[in-house]
Every structure is written in C-alpha cells, then in structure tokens.
Length: 261
Length: 311
Image 1 (cartoon, each protein chain N blue to C red):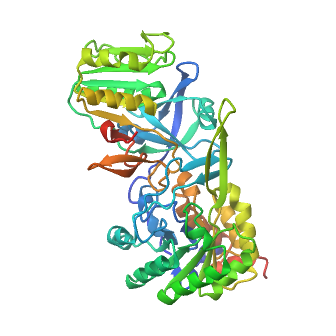
Image 2 (image 1 turned 60 degrees about the vertical axis):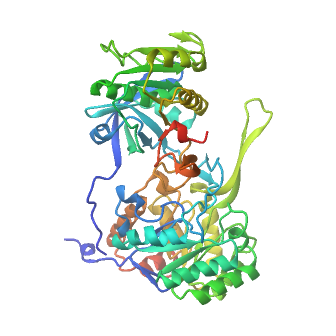
C-alpha cells in the first residue's frame, strides 16, 4: 500500500524540562523547552502531558510562554502530578498541545482573578495584556501564599492583589469577602478568571450584578483532551437553550454568563 | 542489498465484502466521526475508522461524571451522545469521502425497528460497512440487552441483514455466559463479521474522606486491564464461527496487536489508547509493514498462519 505522508506538523511534541520549582507547600512550576508549543500557546489554552505508567494524559493550563520555553503550574494531587514533581532538569516529556481555545483578549480595562492553581492561565494572560499595553488588575486567591514571582515587575499602573485564606500574604480571608470592593475600586470592563467552579460561579454572578462580562477557563477530568470522547461535556446556554459543549475542544474558556453552573 | 527488501507485503484483509488496506481500525467512540485526529496522523492511512455510535435521532448522553480512570483502565458512561444519522450523513460523510478515509458506521438503536431504520438509511446512502452496537452498557434500553439474549439477537441481526446488503459487523459484549452461542447466533442470522469486545460493565467507588459516604460511577471499562478478557473471548468464539473477527480490548502496542491475531482476530481496533497516543493506529500500520518486510511475510494470511502455529 502507498502510505500518505504527513503534510503538516504533528501536534505531539517532545519537550525538555528546564526547571521544576516549588512555589508553595504543594504547588510547583515546571518550565519546558519546546519552540512550537511556546510559539503557539495563548493564555487559556492547555497542554496534555503523558505521565509515565498512567493510562491517560493529564491536562495543564499554559502558565507562560516566551521564546522557546513555556511553563505550567501544578498542585500535587494524584499520581500524575506526583510524577511531574519528580521530573528533573534535562528530562524529556511527551506533550500534546497547545489545545483548546484561549481567552478572547479585548482592549478593555480588565480584572484578572486566579484562584488556587487556577492562577496559571491568569499569570500568562497578565503577561500578554502587559505586552499589549492593556490596563488590568491581577488578583491571586489561594489558601496560603503561592509565590508566582514578580509577574508585574515595573508595571506600576497594573495593580496586583493577593488574597490568602490564612493571611500569609495580602488580604486575609476568602474572595467573597473582597470581590465587590475590588470591583468598585478597579471598575473593570471585563473579568477573566480561572479556579474552582464555586469561585468562578460566584465571580460570574457578582459580575452580572455589575454588568461586567466574564470569561472563565473551566477544568474537568479529560479522557482524550482532543474533543472525541465526549467525557468532559458541560451544559452551556446557547440561545436560551442548554447545549452540551466539550470543555477540552469547545472551551476551556467560556462566557461566565452562559455556563449552567 | 538484502533479500527482504524485495518483498512488498500485502497488509490487506477482507472483512465480509469489505477489503481493507490493512487490519488496523479505530474503535467506535475513541476517534470521533471522521478526521478529527488529522492533527496527529493521516487518517487515510489506517484500515478504517469506526465512527462514534450513531443513533436515529441525536442524543445528549448521560449526566456527569462520565469518565473515571482506574488502574490501567478507564470507566466511561458517555451514554451515546451523538449527532444522529441525518446530521452525520449531511456533515460528516462528505469529510470521510473527500479525505479518502475508509470507514464503518457504528449504529445503535433502542429497539429492532430503530436498527432496521438505520440499516435502511445506510443502504440507501451506499454505506460500505455497518457495525451493530449491541453492547453499549451505558444506555437504558437496547444495546447490551440485544447482545445477551440469543433469540432477540437473531431476530435483530436477521432483520438488519434483510435491509442492508453490504458488510454487516456485529459488535459483541463479553458480559455474556456463553460467548460461542452468541457469536454463532450472529453468524447464523447473517453477520459478515464479529467485532469484540465492547467495554466491560464496571463500577468505581471513591469513599469520602470522612468515611461516611461515597461517590460512584458505573459504566464500561476499557484499556489495558481488559485485554486478557478480550483475548479469551476471541479465542473461545474463534473455534465456533467461520466469519472474520475484529478484535479489540486494551490494545496499546504492536505486541498487543499480534496477540489478538494469534488468538484468531483477522483485524483489530484501537480504542482507549487513541486518547493517550493519538497517532498509535497509524504507527501500528507502519510497524506492521516493516515487521512483515523484515520477517518475509507476503500476506496477512501468512502472518496469521505462523502466529497461530498452523504450519
């Protein structure tokens, strides 16, 4: 038989680990080297990493991409993330991506809210907005302080706020204690967020009160991550009717007002 | 120059009236409808794509949770979410044709009449091959139940056969007491081939941290952990039927594929492994070609004969 040859780049890559750094007790940052992934990644998109001995790949939001390197931020939760935490500089990983649709970046004064490990795409988005000169405030909420590094260095007009439940940095308490104050102070024209569903639901409902559009980056366990298995579907309001959308392929970014939480 | 470079192996296999360019297919539900995996491989290079299970009317499927990874396996409870046969013919069939992709349509009904209607539609649209999904464990009526009871199975396959002239493949579940009886029934009723196994009925339990309750998911188990079940099922039915068998269940590399050939499969399907290695099916085609070249096999029949120790 005559085999047809590939006419475009295959979206499976080998990426080299450049560093694996602890950000807090259980949160880590991995930096990889791969030019294709780095050049093509947009904030909100994810990569799917093959984790030795596990049947399924694990999805992670891209947390930054620059030149030929990109980063992910992960929390050690199960076997996949445990495997990642053992990766050392110079190790090679099998990665698919970038996958999914990123945030729809608009030239509007923005409020960025990342909760827990959901901070990953928000850090990336903040860097992109800075580059584009779009004014924004950055809120990082977590149980305890996650040292994401000076992502807003030298950008005095872009405020960044930390909210920690244990008060280890910035404002103490949960997001719901502070969100309305922050909205009133910043007066954003658009909100971008990623985090646990209850947090994103709260942010979407609050923003609705202020008539501010919200984009949320959702997460759920994926089987394929490429849109074929229908394992990750969520219901979205489309023309007033609920329809199934795949988080991995149709998302992971959706309009907060359209998600049926 | 070595001798074996002269041999150009013929990897083709015949499944009913269907001649496939090689024995590597992708399993229903693990590969979408058409060329969704073209960003990872050239879909036209594999034997055939078996489409996602298609019903008469679109289906929205089951509520969450739909998937759960277990040790070397995956439990799914998708519930046959699909676009329906009419949308498939309108939107997906042209893509398959334009890209020169060989395919089998997997159809599922809630009752015999629905299967017959689907068969008639496939016949009218000159579809070359249909796989009857009689074994989906995730829908309330139909599917699995048809695959369990010999009398109903006979009636169903017979009726579909009467309305569909091209290649008819019957997909069986391993959740039966007497695999050989079920397989023979399908053959007698007019099936051109058997495909097996579908996912295995399974359940996962996550006990809450306070030990006071648990979360659960019931569905169909796939992946490496079901390979021994699949191999045994195929081995058992092979001795009782003459029609070809398309084997599947946990195949994730070349060696796995050969094991299925050894127990009697004429072709194989890749399922869950597509999720992890989306280019696997094309890779297996390439590996099969070079393996046959190296080992001086001119045809699949020769390879099978050797694997089964028949010479």
